[in-house]
Length: 402
Image (cartoon, rainbow, N blue to C red; front, side, top):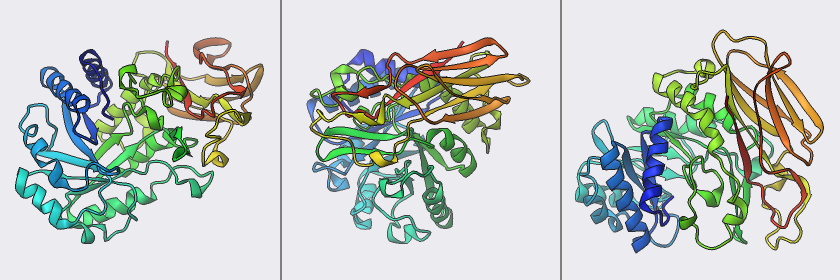
């Protein structure tokens, strides 16, 4: 997500992404302005120097981009850069939205800028095995919806739509891109106040991606603070106003970095399950856990926006992933909520997920134990509250690292 990000932070983002094994940033770009153009230039300049890749994902959900011809010239200025991402040596161009763009418009874009792969992220279209019959000029599709719809209720994330798009892509000789994301929580005005379920999502999605084996994988997202699914840094200069910082300040999500490198290695190896995911730091165990800092019943009535749409799908749970080294036995994970033990679970070598219900107010503490000895533990800086001035259902994310 493009904001006004200074050069030091652009460089830091790239270095951090590279350290995790990420190959490229998809730049979600929605308007030509001094701040957006400046950030794009800084990202490309640093990527050229650091050997990183970038491609554009033009945002067609708002009022600025209505037709691909609006960004043809901008593409011309960047496609030849060393840092522009290519798939099989062809530059990749994506979007957010654009379902109403005609085949002729996509064809005109390709005729203007040359050979490109057009793989848009559609979020309003209905997946179908005949999808490309309606979009013959596209080279692939990215299923943006990595979370259940609110109307689906308290369900685990599914691969149904992913597999339908993948079937359509394979049948037409096209590409399929899949998403990986922890949750979606938006809370900054009356039109943007919703929660798409993170419970039973990320910890399942790791295995789903490896099983489905899409052509490309996009992590949603590196820095979209407004929707709370950032796994990377969020910088203060990119924030406009106080609404988004009200539910992101103090909610650092880099705890995900404890398990992302192992997953990315498994993805790049072509693994079809999570069995080979082990600690990457040489320790006996490594992991991450996450939870809301408000209960579903907590009082936030002083917040004029109120609780988000989808509040009925939230659970009072502590969820996490623990990776255990090969040959390591006898480990357990234990979760405390305030002074109450929510439960324990025996761990096996490789990938383990856990989910404990009945979270209460107070501090959440997670320990990985070998008998009575603590192998690794973590507690978040934020307590679970019974009341708050903000109806904040962002996740607190805490790493478990020796």
